[in-house]
Image (cartoon, rainbow, N blue to C red; front, side, top):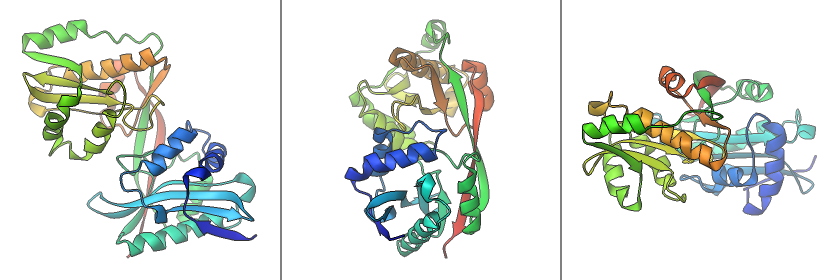
Length: 302
């Protein structure tokens, strides 16, 4: 093989999208989605996107970046795929070694797989992508965490919130779709407990309509739920949160159901609720169930 490594360019998107489709059959891969994951990454660094060509043909790619996350500086590997006919030839290892070296030069203390908030495709590696697990383990990565995604069927789902909103109104609380003038108030609300979700919430303001619902007490935002903030047009829900002082007022249920109603209006038949903590809440409120498990791997670089 005559291999050449270089940064990914926008004109490479059709080729790497096809490789991703064959390598990641459990994910809704499309060219716009791959563009979002690579070129719309807030910490995008061309040096940390790697394509491998063999005699001019792209046979593998890795997309990553470096970010301060999880209380350390991390090299985040967001996507890695090798064309099936070129596997077992060391291409994956070459890309990983190159990424790790460059990430270390940029101050990364560890290299980590997939959970690259705010702009992630998966919150870890689906164990069904077994060759990827084997590759990372051989390269010295250790299994350090697990994540789950839930699946919500939208067919026949009752997303009505009139009664819940009437009860909230009795307490002076209103739920509505966010508007452009909410940006500053939303950022103030997110500061602190929900700081890590600022970028995803900001992304909703790029959509038409703005894909965010807010709960308000007068002029004060006290709750929010987003959709199409990440992995746009795939039925991706979240993030969401409520001021602890207002929990129990059903604002979470109202904003969640409004997001699901928006997906129904788009013609979606299901929604994905990623990286879930409160499984019981989503199961009880919209009948969601655990659909996928993800493993997170990490390797020290220092």
